Each structure stands twice: as structure tokens, then as C-alpha cells.
Image 1 (tube, one colour):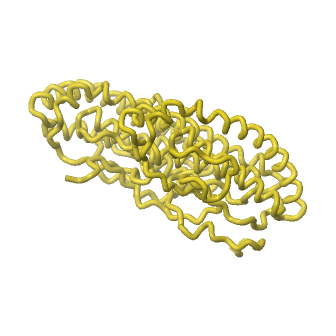
Image 2 (tube, rainbow, N blue to C red; image 1 turned 120 degrees about the vertical axis):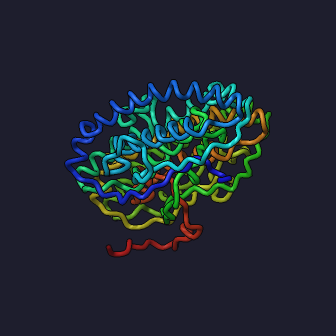
Image 3 (cartoon, rainbow, N blue to C red; image 1 turned 180 degrees about the vertical axis):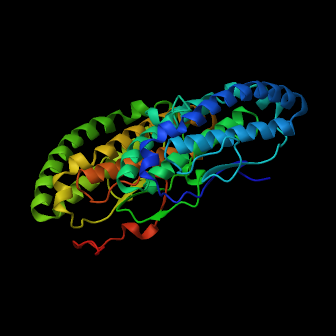
Length: 412
């Protein structure tokens, strides 16, 4: 039996036709109408499947096939609407789409889990609202992560004829969780949806970003500190606010200095890097991504959820001049990621109180959100000239080992 009974596969080549991008919603209308009709039939079939699975302990094969096709068709249509794929989907939910779903045959399921499936799915429904949106048929119109990625990707694809991989993979991550949830609700599997971005799609790109997050936490959580987490974090939140005022002034000075010299002054780079690390330590503690009580200095290597920041490099002065404008799309994605971090922490709070552990999927989802937020701050504060990467990825261990001296970027 496969460890992941519901799997998302991605074979999209990122190329987009500008005409199909511009008129994407109109092209998708017939599929959305058909999907709405199919959803009505799937609702009644799901009720029959629930009764059969409750009695027999497993989904009925013909019903399973019908509902599996519905889940695949839903994923295909949402991938097309959200610019996650370019090719028009089919109306029958057959495999072979560039963003596809593989679903294992029927397996025996726990009857108690089947009986209370809707209740058990409530936490996952809350999380899918953040990832895909409340209206599953139109994520591009919502403020979800998939909606924001589709909105920004529309402008980029219209300009360049290509979808950025980070945005495409972010869309695929949301659709992966949605497919797992729909399969769980429709009793195609009793495996609870996993929010882990590191296993949602694959293979993930390995990147050498100048701002990277490293998680060495062992997932164990103290129930007592979890229960009083916000109260315990209060001194840090006060100190972070005071430090934030100084960091804002330092960022303004850093902007002027980098605009003139083309490189951030060493002392300002180190000051802002320490602030970013401390900000990450506090956020990790508040959002239950990390367990130990953090220190107040933002020292490198002092917390199990660590931010590795490369040394300063030369930056393009035009990019520096318009940095606040260029950062607007990243700030929009960071805001959506903030909702994910909050939701993962909210659900993780109950799970950690009950089990004494933070679920791996929720920890990694929160870590992904914090990583993107840190990269956004690093770009906005001119700690780095690298634009934040929006999708899940793997980091090279040697990325932080950057020479102390100022170096120019390699030629293109």
C-alpha cells in the first residue's frame, strides 16, 4: 500500500500562451459549469458511498471510480483556472493532465472514521480555505494562497509568456491539499490530508537563496508552554516592537547608502540580519514552529528554527531605487502566507495540547510561511537583492557559507 494514497503529479513546462492567459476565465467557463453539474451528482453518489463504506468497511469499486474521476476533473479545472497548467482540461477527468492526481484503489477503512468523517474533516476544511479559498471553483478570485499566486501569475505570464516556477508550485501545493481533502471527504481514502509542502509535490527544486530557513526542531512540545504561549511570548513581542522601530530607521539609512555605494554597509547589514533572525525566532515560538524559549539577541545558531543569511553583495541601483514598489507582489504573497502560518498554529495548538507534539505537516507549512516572510523582509530591507521564492523548495546546506568580503554577482 502506497504511503500516500492521493498523489499530485506535475509535468507542466511553465510555458503559457498570452492569448489563453488573457481570456483564461472565459475559456474555463464551460468547464466550471460542467464541474458544478458534476458536483451535484457527486454529492448524491458520495452519500451512497458513505452508507456502503460504513457497512462494508471499504468504498464500492464503481462508486470509487466515479468519485475519483470527479476529484481529478476538479483538480484539472482548478489548475487550468489558476494558471497552474496551460492545456485545456477534459470533461471526463481522465489521467494525463499536466497537473494530475493519482488515487489508489479502494482500501479498508475504519468505520468510526467513516461515521464521523465530516466532523473529522473540519480542521482540514479550515486549512483548505486558506490554501485554495472558500469557493473551490474559483480560487483565482479569492484571497487564498492559490488565488494570490494566480493573480500575480496572470500578469507575469501575460508579459513573459511563462509562469514563474515558484508561483506554479505554490498553486500545485494548494491543489495537492485540496485533492487530498476531497478524496478524504468522499471516502476514497481514510488517510488524513497532509499539509506538508515538502511532500505535496515533487521533485522539489534545490535552491541556493541568500536567505534560507533551517528547521532542526524535533516536534515535541511542552503542553504547559503551548497553553500559555502568547503570554510567555509577551516580553519578546514588546522587545521586537522596539527593535522594529530601530530596524525601520536602519532600513531607510541602508536604502540611501546602498543607492549610493551599490552595496549595503557592513554594520547595517549585520544589524538588520540580526533583527531578521530575532524576528524569525519569535515568530517560530509564537506560531509553534519551534518549542524552546528564544533569546533576545537574534544570535546565529541560537534557535532550532534558524535563519541563515548570506553576506552582503552588490545590488543593482535601479532595483534599489524602486525596491518598495518591486516588493509589493512579494508583500501580497507574504500576507497570504501569514494566514497560513496563523491557521497552522491555531490547529497545531490543539494538536500539541492533545498529543504533546506538533504535527509535521503543520510545522513545515508554518516554516514555509515564515521562510517566505523572512525573504520578503530581507529583500525589502536590502539585506539581499534576491527576490523571494514563493514555492516550496529544498535548500543547499552550503548556501550560508558566503565569503565575508563584498562580491559582485556573477555575469549572466
